[in-house]
Length: 221
Length: 221
DNA sequence: CTACTAAGTGTAAAATATACACCTAATGAT
DNA sequence: ATCATTAGGTGTATATTTTACACTTAGTAG
Image 1 (spheres, rainbow over the protein chains, first blue to last red):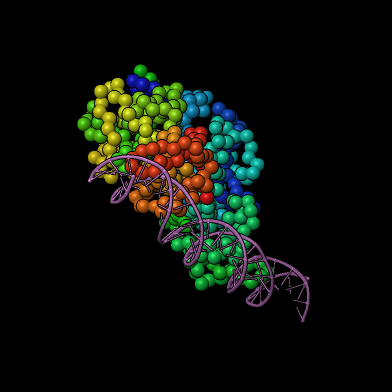
Image 2: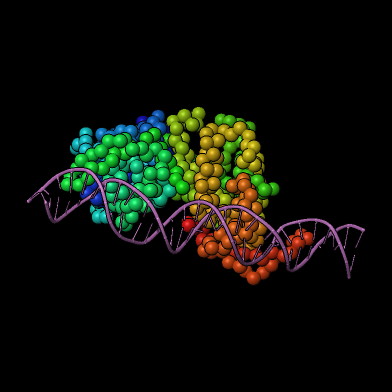
């Protein structure tokens, strides 16, 4: 037992883990196996250990749920309304992460709860204030699409400009002009032509590009 | 005494309160009257009550230290490194606020600690990780200057375009072209010519403008 | 050999951002 | 009252950036 002169809230991290599949933006959800909200879908997350950094806690959750490491992770917002959790006062430091489209093998997680990707366009009823958290994460992602290279963090190590354009079009929800798109992304620092090509389908092979991602994002324009 | 099965961190809010005075960007600091860091300067802040919303806690601190209400306040980031406070694990949800240049009468605060405005360009050694917090707040403010109407929240109810230009020049640290500046700000929604003028100094009187601030900021261009 | 597909490429027009100088309406000193 | 001084107020031409737009290429499949 731990004793304090004043009441202390519990701290959790919740993570909005985005990926792209089937030309849709998707979020990883866990089916809760315990009360409260047993059986409802929720964001992956959990309590922060007393000597654990917040970002480390988020990375730990991310690894536990997806098995992936070394991907883009950013603090989103801290949610702390007094009654957001019916058990006790819980403050959640929310993060969001971007899983590259070639790494979305979900590791069946240890505590037997079900994890699945859900399209953002048709999410089930979520537990707690998780609808707000997802909504804010989507807004942030959409905003960063316009002034940073964040979208590159959805890409595999080598990708074609056509694939990249589809990523932008999926998230923004509008078609883009191919020539203008290419002119623009090729001005980004960190995008490099590998010289290699990929044959794929009944059409001309596409050049493969890399992006030297240092885990950060670059501001553009 | 309060008892928990698992250890819980303490939660504080710290606020970076900005204003502009003497053509400098300033931050409100408190001289700590207790250990740790007794006698050092620190950001205003304090523990969040167990049934108090995070933003309410920040607003309460803001009011206690400055007496002002109804000003721009935004969550900045949550700082949670395990050893950021030598006493116990303390997680700080940092906010930043903008005090209009006509409202910076600091209310001498109740617990006899000294509060003073310090120019951002020459801050004293700060307690805890407060240098990082201030630094991040400055970056955020500088970034928002470019794509939002946040600077308007430094302005009094009625202001001249010359005053507004000086605010922009002070924060950005570069002189701006008067004609281009005026063209630009007059495209912002919410800026209105009152029709009134202000005589002041040995020069032509200036038109007075208002900005209908709903506590929010508008994104531009 | 033909039909089909996505890859790849340039230019002109429109919109936006920048550079730049003089007149105006006050004040204060002579 | 005149003059010097101060910040307020205004428009246009040029450069830069963004947008719109169509055809050729290199492959696959039948």
